[in-house]
Image (tube, rainbow, N blue to C red):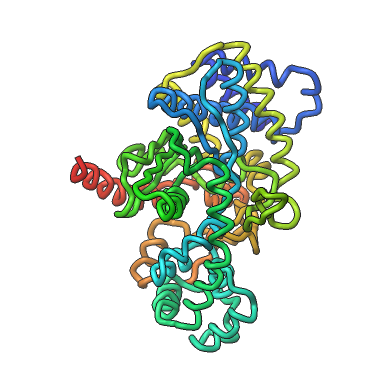
Length: 458
């Protein structure tokens, strides 16, 4: 009953854009639809339209800018790549779509060679349940090398302890002054650099052709890393990217090179507060494993993928089928695109319900998907972690403020999709306003900074 009410709610939203509503109806009433699970019906109704809106925007923006080639970055870019190829073929869009096998780990290992001591900043980035062992894995060090560094810096025996923000800051300072650590990182980077550059050049990223990147986004570090590597071979190269959303950019990034669809550092404050990038990544990704490096075979560089399939591979393969079926029905119904304004309005109304105010059915259907925010996926857990009442209270605004006032000394168990965790724990959906209010306060401050920076750049 709850599932049907939510599906009807999505259908009412989609009726504002009839081709979307008709495409969803066609998929859900087509051959084999009787066997669809509640999760699959929800995906078709709320998720597939969102992704298609973004892809249509990216293709339109790229075509208007004279872009001739788009690189869709693994793995979030995989369903975007599939949808873009289908639309380009159906509509005769003169843009070449390529899928680029990259990952933060594979690219940054080579980038460390160019950064020197500054590489410690990215290696010690904050995240969920960060440990000394995870930090060593980010740096590409093996167990023996990590043990030597731990003994030198006083972390021996604590390698798997979750670090507070303050402890992570201390570790960052110590690693920046450790010759043992920096030498090991440099050696690993020297080994990785030739193959990474060989792959990027082979894929045409040094060619003199207008191209751009397409990805989910968030903080733009992948584009920065790729640009730094490519600039080491071709001076003055500048990359541009089209992203679903961008939260913030560091001072060394040019805002004009990061085109955001749903929200940017200076726009979409409430859309950010009602959004969950972690859930987005579990819904829109590739079923294959992460790229861990590259090797040369028969004169060509090929990506080396992590052993086994990626997280949530089985359901992602099913989502892929549903997405392409939906895209095909949309093309038959519409034959054209949708304006950014209409797309954002539709996207916002769908994602507000799914991400910020999920039903129990949605929280259970999607909240159990595995998620990891680290460059490696070790220790992945449910995106909507099952938390106790006490742990859930740490998501409240006042509790978060206390953590900040403590200087980051407290270790807090977090959920990647807090709203989903609240609903899974049996709280009424209205209780999710605590998480929303905290994100609203957090992004409001960054929103002001983003607007100030945009004013200075103009």
